[in-house]
Length: 286
Image 1 (cartoon, rainbow, N blue to C red):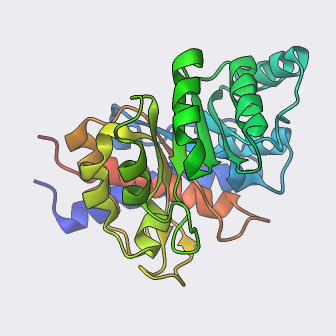
Image 2: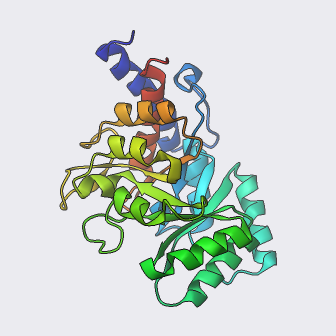
């Protein structure tokens, strides 16, 4: 059984593996210094593209390579919604060169008209992904449900916390979509869920059948004033969350979304990657 001391030691090893080489000025290739801190999981670690708001695609992929993270949720500032088939092909070729797979698009806001919904599904089809992360109007949910059937593309609604009048938490989404097509679900932002006064571990268990994607983060407080912080420094019990991911047999992505310092996200992201690997190594397996 792992002691608290062993957990801390493994967390430090994970941070060393992911953060320190990636931040070393002369480092070019990721090296798995501590492979024992990287047990396989049914879920993958990724990056939510919004973390790279102030960086072009090349710089973003270079950071992912340094952190040895291989899954990206694609934002339209890296691949515009009106991208041609040729541009999409070139985009995927660049991702492949860095060992990265684009697994979803979004979040895409679709609150002005149904034309935005139509365009979003066409965009996902051209990009070749099977998941849209979206923010639609409530009155359009049945229309979107029909689209998910027609395109065989899942649609995950993103919750945005207490400021969000539409979808503040996981329950607010689930209650609206659980009777719709099974391809309607959630992009579960565990940080915003916590800021809305909810329990993210309990909500992960309650709504897991419709959770298609996770914005993986921690926050400084379980209140409206809580801010995104490094994974190991906030109020969310990350070991408990990872244990629940195993319990529910989650098979999607846990994409880090780091908004603490968006002009310089690499140190915080790298620390979070290392902490994650420490957690999965230290937790006992059933």
